[in-house]
Image (cartoon, rainbow, N blue to C red; front, side, top):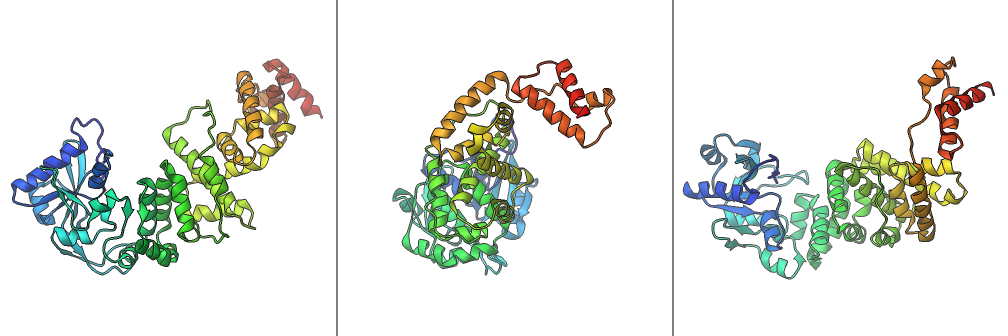
Length: 424
């Protein structure tokens, strides 16, 4: 789907822009419908973020009506139309040829609305809507399945899932997000084709997992991945059946957000690390967690930031049980880690009483200052006449620990301590 909000500041809604585009096709004598997820979402009383159009016009005819349109999948009849600050994906009605790579057809043939509806993945995504009248054009009984909260592959489930193996995960995402029951034949096909997910681009698998975990239905999605036999192919690791104790318990854990400011991307990265950490621990393995992080990074194509956040969350989970024995400096250093609250949330599924104690300590530490600016830096040591070397880090760490403990409060005291340490 095109990002209908690609251009900010537009006064025209995504729906109105798409409806105006469809009206131009109708005026030129072509059929043009809203198609796919936007129709599904409207029927579910959700607000679609973008609108796609399916039309009887060919790509050449689309370009004739919209000369500035840009092709993104022209060999598949897909064109992006820019209109009033919005971008709308317009695709010609088509029938797909033979799929050979488990991702896309070798070729396409121009078709009509019936063939176009029947080439799609699930019935809930195969409904058309006339933008001018709101009338539904439903050749696959998608509205009925929405009403009965059923996820059903269109026609032959084996064929639909073999065509694009990512549909195995898309089925999970739709079922979890929209609280649908997967109908028996579709469920049997998912289980039968589960191992084929290994052949899907790891980047695409990771994107689907991110979308699931970003949504409030994340626990249901992870449960379905496990129960449908998709976990080993998605994560590229074999593990015994799991009850997902930690993952399920996370839904009940509510912790105050850290005071440190986070942007939306940092928050989503922490959320991903939180649930991946719990999931990784629930999936018991004899391998060290560090090695498994490396495997999951490859399996899901995690970014460096995502990998590092997952690593620090799991590392902190090994440290949190030792909190009662920590010095004040150790507590402050631990609490200053950006993954601290993610680790606490996961650990609360094992030891809620300890986590409540830690939160009480954290509140007091916050009053004192968890990560104050160090009183000394390397330049200060050079100015004192000390020679740069490995001992710099040792001295600076010791001085900062003293600052965190509250035993020194001024730069002079910090300098005196540094001189004392340099002589030992």
